[in-house]
Length: 256
Length: 335
Image (cartoon, rainbow over all chains, first blue to last red; front, side, top):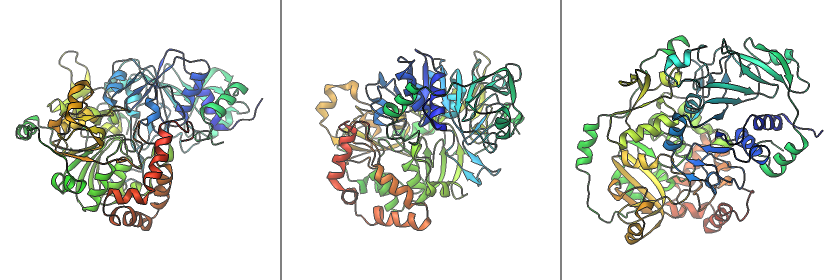
């Protein structure tokens, strides 16, 4: 087995979540690498959608931006943000990958600010970007993020992007489309899912060498446990080779 | 805190731009329909179309297909109290915020430089009360432009609901008269002045964007009361007429046209040239201190007389040829 770093593990686990012929709305960074890796392995026909308007490019290299030249290289269509976001609102987009500075037990995400004074925050982050839209309108939201108790918090300072809000039924009560919501959270320690009855986050699979105690130590709220915990398969030699040689040879994402 | 968000019917922050469609119609009624030569200079385009206090909307994607020459000129002319749609904005909002030109912003994405991290100068500017803020999402601002382009006062949508993003917006909820469902009602956005960089335009302002993404530019262009276009190349009116489907923005939206080759530098211009990563690295390092930020403006904006002199400073045609080669995939995978 080849040695791997935490970022490589995140990318490989993320790529395995996707199905062929599904539609995936992709952001910059780890999600982009995960999707490219999936395309080169088990999902040659996964349809990638980028928020500036491109669909299904044949990426000649890792994009720097979700709107750069590479995202429209040999795409089906180079369209508008309005068009691709309306495609999400119409129910045509299966998956989206997101991240954030904070996440709570219902999968609500903060990428706007830290502090309690909106006009004068302690720390200001970029804001929603497309994250709120994608988590509202795509069918399944996958979050990819490192795990520690500063990120996994009891209450986020600002709900930029909706998870299950306050629990079961809250999304629908607020007016969000039926049947949408958080699906998985992929961290450097484990894979988390959501309990059907409470919509709370639960541990589903531990990465090689990681214990439940270690996960709990790195989480600021109470986690549920799946009935049978699995062990995450480590990245295969083939996954690592394609990731390092073809997806991210310059190490922008995986840092090699 | 969470519970009150689910039933919230109104955002609590300021609505910066009047969404009344009859007020917009009164303006558009008097907009010039004549097909006249609108070609001018960067200096004139700004001094004639951007006033202190105006609300601006910038096309492109923050560091892709951005109208850099106009942005620098706004800073150079010392415009003040500008509002801005911080829609997928990066270098554009950073410049207007950290130079002190901006005093209010509809934010969906600012401060971030995607894969490169965050800008210290933009963060510092947006953390103070000197810039009044209202938050939205990317689609929300895209659809607000669409509502403006359609001559409406709002558009219903299914995003933002139940979140602090809605609470810190100026949206409201509305009940659908057909289904009884709850939607967000997004107010139309009619900017005082839009600014867009395109690949090709004729002298009247008919524009083409033949490569890369459009973002929300077709809507932003139509919703804006005034519109400044910079282009890589002027083309003939006959060329426009030979392929009408290729026209992205019609001339009647446009007030000024300026030919600015390499006009998106340091941004990417799809099909033309790649990002100037050396420049972005220099910029993000330099603006980590207030002194550095002032020095940047002194060197690259106040210290040069125009965009041509700026291009010389960043390496001239030789540098741009290098960036063209990357975009044309001559050095594929080494961007």
